Image (cartoon, rainbow, N blue to C red; front, side, top):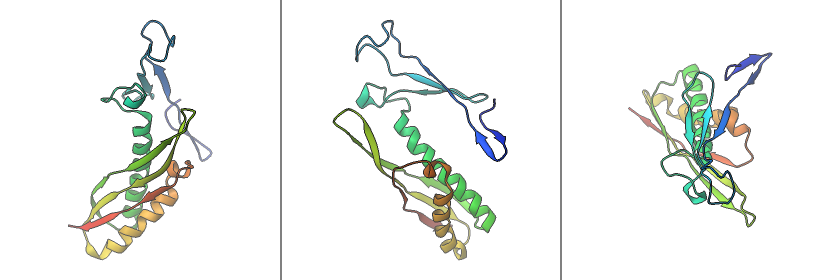
Length: 162
């Protein structure tokens, strides 16, 4: 099956995760295994990941928390750009500095308490600035990933005119 198969308006996705951190003893002890993994999606480059360094991972690889924030930011951006294209707002540049705060529990679990997107958008025409700003609200309402999360997700957008 492809990563996205459309059936009767339903999109199905598939990925395979492989743990690469067995150093020969499996999980014989908390410090005896690596946190490395690979994410495989058919027809796409593998993604190398690990735990956050705070949880014995490697700083030079993506961790699930990084990917969570990136997914939220990318989904918002893709909806936003499509809305702008449909509404006649010409976007020339888009960047986002997304931030999230995760709080740990005593039992070792944790939860993101909040995520804030900080999209900075450059548009071609100042007459579209108010609409460009408002479309972030619509993009947030439509975002598949944000709609799938229990964590509060906010956005604080900046619109610039070239």
